[in-house]
Length: 274
View (tube, rainbow, N blue to C red):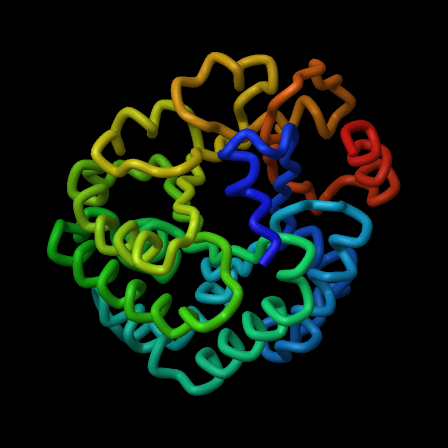
C-alpha cells in the first residue's frame, strides 16, 4: 500500500495531490458507456487511464455514484429500506466487489485507493427520500448498513474512507452521532478517515465527528494554511478557470475535476501544479 495520505499527515510528504474525478473519467475515458456501473473491469480500467493523465495520488471508488446508478431498485421502498434494497441486489454487490478488488490490485502500490461514501442523509435523499422524513433512527439504521458494507473490503489494500457531507437541512448533530459507527470502522482497519465537506461551515456542525483530514474543494488554496486541522482544497472553480495557486511548502491540493471543461484545458491546469 502506498500510504501517501498518511505520509503527508506525518509531514514526510510535502505535497499531496488528491483529485476527485468520477464524472470526468466516466465522460472522457468511459464515453458515458451504459456499462460503466455494470462492468467492473471497464470501470476500474477507466479510472486508471484517467489517472495517468491527472496524476492524483489518491483514487476513490465513489459509492454515491454507484448507488445512484442502481436507484431504481429503491423506488418502492422507504427510509433505510431504500439502501437495503440496493445492497441486496446481486449485480450491485458483484460490481462493487469486483471493481474495488481490481482497483486495489492495479493501483494500490502507487496511489492510495480510498472508499468514498455520501453521508447517510445525502444517500437517502439521492435515493428519493423526503428530507423532512429523515430522523436520527433513519440515519442510524443507514449508517449501520453502510458500516456492514465497508467491512466486506477489509482484506483489500484500502487506504482510507471519505465521508461526504452536503448542506441539506438535516440535523447535523444527529448525523454526526449516527456516523460514529463509520468512523469506528475506519479506525478499526487503520484507514485514514476523511470528511469531504460542501463548504467550510459544515465543519463546525460536525464538530463531534473528528477526522484525520478535511477536504473542502471550494476552499481557496491561500486559506489552507489558516485551517486548524489538516485540510485539503484549492482546486476549485477559480483554479479550473485559470486561477493560479500560491506556492507552499506543505499542502494538500484537493478538488473535483470538472467534466464539462475541454479535456485539453484540464491537462494544462493539472500540469500547472504537478
